[in-house]
Length: 163
Image (cartoon, rainbow, N blue to C red):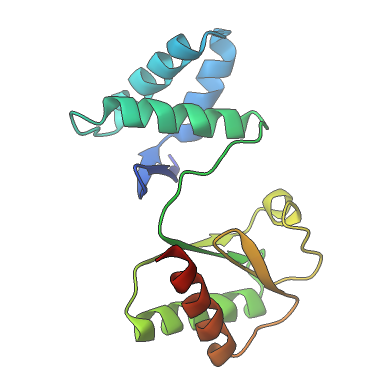
C-alpha cells in the first residue's frame, strides 16, 4: 500500500491508500461536492489517523487532491518553501537532490523537498532535459546540476519573497 503526501493546513501529511480511495470514489458515481468530501473523508479515515478538529481541513484537502487526480486544475494550498527536483532518477537528478538537501541543512531552514519522477508531472513544467529544479512553483534550472552556491542563492531569494 502506497503512502502519498497531501497538504493540510500548510503541513504535508501522508495518506495511506490515496489512489485506491480515489478509484473507489470514481466507481461510486457521486457527483455532489459535499457528498464527495464526506465519502473521501470516510474512506481515508478507515486506514489513516485523522486528528479530531481537523475533519473539515482533511475533507477540503482530500477533495482538492481528488480533483487533481481527475485531471482538473486546482490551486495549491500555500505552504512554506517548496522545492521540487524533476527527474526520473538518473545520477544527475540524484546529485541535484543531494546538493539541495545539503544546502538546506547548511542554511538550517524548514523546506518541503519532493523528488518528482513521474514524466507526465515533469512535462507540466515544460522540462525537456532533466534534472529540473523548481522552487515555490518557479522553474529555476533545467538540464544541469547547478553548483551549490547558485542553489543557495535561489533558495535565499525564495525565502525573502515568502517572509
